[in-house]
Amino acid sequence: MQLKTELAPRHKSGLQLKNPVMTAAGTFGYGTEYAKIAEIQRLGAIICKGTTLHSRHGNAQPRTLETASGLLNAIGLQNPGIHSVIKHYAPMWSKWQTPVIVNIAGATIAEYIALSEYLEGIEGVAGIEMNVSCPNVQRGGAVFGSSPQVVAEVTEAVRSATTLPLIVKLSPN
Image (cartoon, rainbow, N blue to C red):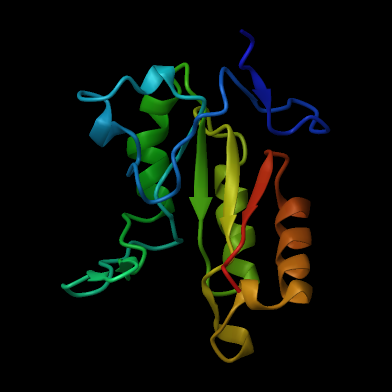
C-alpha cells in the first residue's frame, strides 16, 4: 500500500510525507521530547509547538480545564523564541527522516514576516504552519483568523517573505 502524501504539490520543492500521519502543533512539543519514547521516524511529519519572535513563559497555572464536553486549554504559547528554536532544535531536525513544519505565531503581520524570514534556508525546517488564531494587536486584539480579509493579508505577506511550503492553521472563527 502506497501511503506517500504530497502536501505542497504546486511548490517547487514540494513537501512529501511518507504517510499522512502528522502531529498537531502544540501536542508534540518540538519532537525531541518524544524521540526516546515514540518512533518519530515513522510519522509523516511533525508540526512543532507554536513559536514566537521572543520567548514566552505562557499563562499561569491552571492552563487546562476539564469540561463536560472536553478539555479547554490556554497554554499561552509558551516557547523559547525563534532564535532558540533555530539554534537548539533545527540541527536535530536536520538529522531526522521525518520533516518538521514550524508553527509560527505573531501579534502583527510584521512579526509573521520576520518569523518566516528567520526560518528561510534553515536546514531541518521543511515548512511553516502559520497560526492565525493569535490576537492582532494592530486591529484592537481581534484574532487574525476571525476575518477572511485579514487571513488573506497575513498569508500574502508571509507567502511573499518565504519560499518554504506554507500551511495556514485557521482559528475556529
